[in-house]
Length: 230
Image (cartoon, rainbow, N blue to C red; front, top):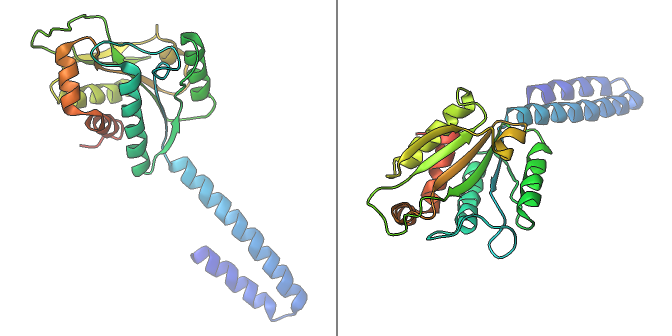
């Protein structure tokens, strides 16, 4: 506001010497005002954190879907992703949804990576659910949560560790932060990337705890970890 006041004062002083000067001053004011606004916008855009997020695999019933057992990955990860977007926006974060619903497994993955690399972001998240234990009857213990990053000794790995610990606080086993160089999303996306495996769709204990916890609480835990909020 002081900058505008100074500009306005200059324009008013010029007005005393004639209409031509007044018009020139008015023109100069508009140009300076436009420059000020552009600079202010640029600075704030630079300060605003930018995060990309997506639900992995195709949408249930449309594309190459994720794991299906007690839980359906392509349904649950989209619920979590939607909540993550809402919470990030509520924290004044610029958010990009890179989810792809339709296509083959390869087509979807390639399009997600292209979406992520289309713009510059501070962080990219990929929401998944794990599978492979086949514990559909339950054994009284969860198989748990894990995250994959490119470098397990990086600042990104510290965020991933916070995500694991936040989700593990609900009762899931913390499987740790793991090397994800073998994963296309982790290795090909330019920005720091974290692939989150929330829990196992084919573990009864995981599924029941997840359903009890709910997608909103999981999303909140992820966002708090990303923003380093307690």
